[in-house]
Image (cartoon, rainbow, N blue to C red):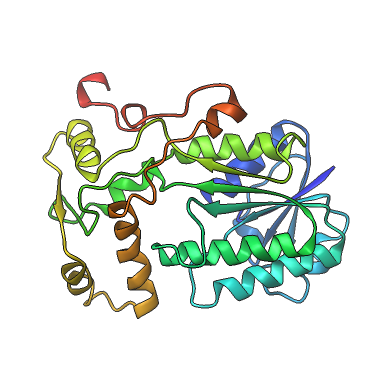
Length: 278
């Protein structure tokens, strides 16, 4: 079996490629810039990206395509649809797609709508699929802290069942190496639904300085991001990620990580251990 991996220069795609390489899987790593790809046993680097004319040829002879969603752009759905078509035209049998919890055509999180449209494109091909719907990434929460050590956003008192990226990597590698999860959608979450106050408290204990969460209104959230030079669709995505927390869209805790890995998912205390434990 040959597995093609997109996004292998990043954390998720690269981590999955390393695990599959260690297992002896034949890999085809796809990138517009192959120099950024890891040099792994059993792996061939191919210059190809979503929307490229050569993607179909790059996927010929591939059994399974691990499709890591592209960086957010205004036309990301078009790129995803083109990649799905290329996979189907190349004779790929199965697509494992990295999606997002609660993906729907009208979900609060605007970038989540891209994932729903991509899932539909995969379903329309008739190919075997597995959709890995991730929650917010727990280990990326420090990036939400401002220079003043404040997390600002309109998340209200809502909670999100944030998942560690390392768990997503392990789950994806396990799914790619087995047919047990074919034609299923897995919601990948951590072990608990966390408020942003919980996150701030954990970061305070881990970093040794006070981190706090400030609940913005939607108007305040748009105003505080107005001078970043971003386009409206980008700001909508940023703000709506907090609004999805406030609405409870991301609060459901599942056992899907445990079902695949036969262990509990990593929790906030493992990702951000208190200083006293370091």
